[in-house]
Image (cartoon, rainbow, N blue to C red; front, side, top):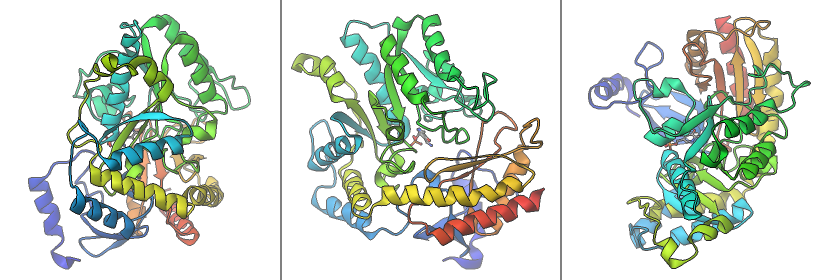
Length: 451
Ligand code: PMP
């Protein structure tokens, strides 16, 4: 711990590093985090914080899992690197394990980040159709408010203009539809009058775009970074059925929802759908090393690429994708999750969190509380009747009040100016029930401090 000299680190940071999503405004300064333990992190000034965001939705197993560090060390001292233009055992073992977790046989391509995993999904979806004689199927449908990554394609798929602003033009061929947002239904419905219009709209859009131009739909089971939007029952099944009917593939982005976050191994399993393509990152190594994966259902893959001459058309390569040490850490992550029942634990903690959060409904600025597994969004409003969103500055103030009290919470939303009004909780699965209650207690105090 660096003590009183610590602010100097932020000066150096400002001089030598640049970041996205950081502000140097008062009380929002980036923290220089120097160590972690369980669900807690410590900054360079020795302040301890209970991390209710698991880093950036990654560190599901917390900051002190020696087995993950040992797995990396063992692999790095045995065979530190070899590319997957050949193959190696950690990648093979992990790919087999992922099929097991996905409940069906998939063929897996490894990369390093969620953005890349989604790029791979778009490319393989297009190539799949081209191999089958439909090269015009190149458009990707996605939802407003979703985030799928920072690269030109994954950002084009994202429905958050804030992130695209001043980076356009992005990759062409991406079509957006409204998200399932049961608090502010874009189709004017309420939960009791809902007939899944948001899913049915996808059917219309596919017809309007000429369905033989659509390669795939990409969606998260629950929109996370866009404000924790939990779809109505039946939504995912209906989208799957629409994709199937129009000959488009369904890509499910499990970058945040995967690996236990929703109280199931994967978020889509809670909705009873089997995706054509699944993308994964973050929690796959519990954030200990960079790794991502794109899994294609085996029957679809084989339909297009089973013959050697077709397989030879696969041209996508990646230097560090499937790094042996990252695969070894991922295998250890999944082992720990199985041995210690972390998926069930996340589900149970999610129930505790949901129950605790209910008492925030009494606070005037709280418009809606959405939870799904160990994930929560608390939408702040100026007025409960009109649902006018609370200002971005009020939401930022809540985040900063929590931080002053030693708890790190997130802020998401529809990302239009003034729309970042959802306080977001995504704590690590090692958090105790008492710590969860403390998070909610601090959030309650922070909300009361700003109203
Ligand atoms: N998909 C989702 C749902 C995400 O939340 C993110 C990152 N927050 C990504 C993809 C991109 O992942 P990465 O930052 O690892 O590229």
